[in-house]
Amino acid sequence: MTDQSAAMPDPLALLPADRQWVERTRDGLNAEARIAQLFILSSREDTAEETAALTAFAPGGIHRFPAGDLAATWRATRDALDRAEVPLILSGDIEGGTTSYPFVTPVPNQMGIAACDDLSLSEEIAAIVASESRALGYNWSFTPVVDINRAFRNAVVGTRSYGADTDTIIAQARAYVRVLQAHGIAATAKHWPGDGIDDRDQHLTTTVNPLDLAEWEESYGRIYRSLIGDGVMTVMSAHIALPAFVRSLVPDAGREAFRPASVSRLLNQTLLRDRLGFRGLVVSDATPMGGLTSWMDREEAVPAVIENGCDVFLFSRDPQSDMALMLKGLREGRLSEARLDEAVTRMLTLKAKLGLHRATAEERLPPLDTVRARLRQPADLATARRAAGEGLTLVKDIQALLPLDPVRHRRVTMIAEQGWSFVSGAPERSFAPFTEEMERRGFELRLYDRDHFPTPADTDLLVYLIGQEATPSLGHIFLDMTRLHGGSRKAMAQFNREVPTLLVSFGQPYYLYDAPHFSTYINAYCSLADNQRELVRRLVGEAGFTGRSPVDAFCGQEQLRW
Image (cartoon, rainbow, N blue to C red; front, top):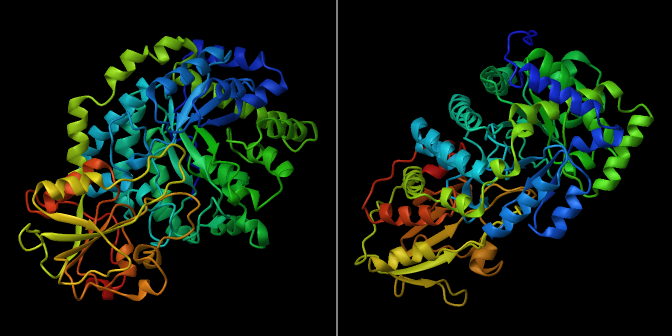
């Protein structure tokens, strides 16, 4: 690896007048106010009380999680903008799938988009996301996820990623970043230095990217170099270690080889900035996560995040305490004045690059009726539904079950998994769209009865509707037959050799690993209503399956193919 800092673009380059605003604003802040600018605090309730409490800390930004009421979201956002003396940046994990606001255009998650294998369609979806996000006041999206989904048991990468192929990830991510930033929203490449090889979750513990330097350079290195060359504005430094790089510089590093990137100067400064040439802003991953909290105590960790190369401190269980710990670290020399000023300057520079210092609150968040009119426009809904359908992937049908016929398969028994999401505001899952579309075509559906197993006498088709989208803190993914069948003994009963059986995942693409003898398997990637409706159209032969799996849905196991 060679130093490329001079060869890469500066995504935060400013005009002289904007640079003067940054310097003037920075120089007018005392130490406490500078520290506050480094913090992005999270909002989940959309209440006046929550907004008042958050803005009282004068943070650099507020991260908004999805909520269900557009008017409440609008009021809370406008209130936060009005209260801020230094322009507030508004961020979000705008990843698509079922973790989006219910009042925006529902678009597939990243894996569902990649399965469409159509970059022009990807750009159309990105434009919808960007336009609606701007209408809602967002300036910064913590997307795209550019992790490589190789560990099929990894529960947190999966459907949030573009898959397992490096070239596909680069192409999809470049298109997404280009469109998002053209609409005035800063994009974020995450999770540096690369997730998806370790099957653990950095929300729970520090995880490890185990690749040697040559392998890393040909995969994650290429991804990040491509996006940095394109001018991605921000990178998220995660609680993930890259021991091969650390040991290349410090052969006897010992435990330090496994230091998470979020507090690693070697990974943030030496590798990301000096070797790869990144000149934008580095934001830490969420600091309450186990990957950081299990590595070092809070008093040490808080200043270490900034001192070791992150410019923004993401989230806090206790903002007052964490800001005090940052100030304590500054006074005790564990956070240098130089690093504090550098980080504050980058945060203000990002705001200036996005034009926040020149925009009024109404320009950043138009009146409610204007916002509502910009959301869920008919053409956007049609594009999103097309993407939902084109990504549906028929992985396996060795019994030639499809297309379904309401005469041969009239009596359908459904075994449905409730699903769960870590994300605040995510809606409860319903399979009503699937049921309604099937019944409209003449099928008779009933739910599985744990006390009466399905048999050929009462069931022509057994359908498993399962699947968990990738989500933090789940640990591992598997097909939970104990829960699906209603008990540990009942889990041992398998019906697929007695009754024609269809397995559909509305989440992770790897559930065939736990059901290798199921003969027909489909990946739908998420359970949006459009995915369910378009699935039924394809099940009955009204449209064809065109999705291309972005991963090896057979998990490298020949057994799963038969």
